[in-house]
Image (tube, rainbow, N blue to C red):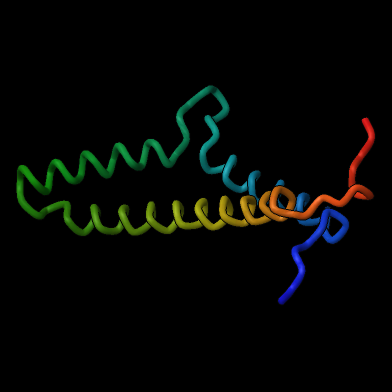
Length: 106
């Protein structure tokens, strides 16, 4: 049986990597320079427009619809992976055993 990690076992460098992951998410979801919406929002609206065309007018836009859907899926999977890495780092802190010697005086 392995012991539960303690705060002393935590690698603080992991927090810096979590910040990098968060920055990659921020870059995808942040507003543009003049408060324009993020590109992913614009692309989701375009996907809705294409889906309406395909549903109402036939399959003329189907290939563009699927190409954009695949691209959005890929970008959102990247966001999910980054968020999961950030959560893993945070759980390393929140789930660690805190010994009396790990306590920090404020």
